[in-house]
Length: 166
Image (cartoon, rainbow, N blue to C red; front, side):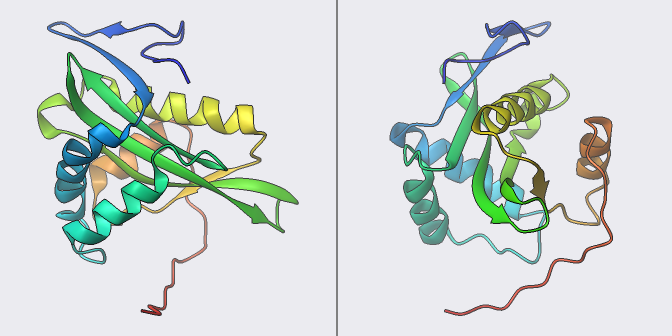
């Protein structure tokens, strides 16, 4: 996927810097882990565990095969990220995407990077023929709730449940 920063596919400019969206690379691991540290600080259900996050990112980056890991880059610095993985939904009768790890460095928020990441992720999903995207957001994270709602996402009546196996 070429770098994407705006609807025309090129870099975008904010008042004081330019940025673009691109596929994550192995060399992005350290800044991505830093971003996950800040994201997981907001999510008590998912404590930060660097070794686990490193392993997960290593399995996602460059894998292809129904996965996409994107970063937002300002200059030479990774300042945002998001990931999506495909699963088959019997409700939709086909492939859907599970979005995770949507996070922008706090110093770069409110500069359209989150929207740029989501637009690029949605374009990837459409290109893959996915029928729906879904994600989890902490119910106490009002900023995230407002962000997703503004971008056309809607709440469902479903609840997230989990059972740890290992």
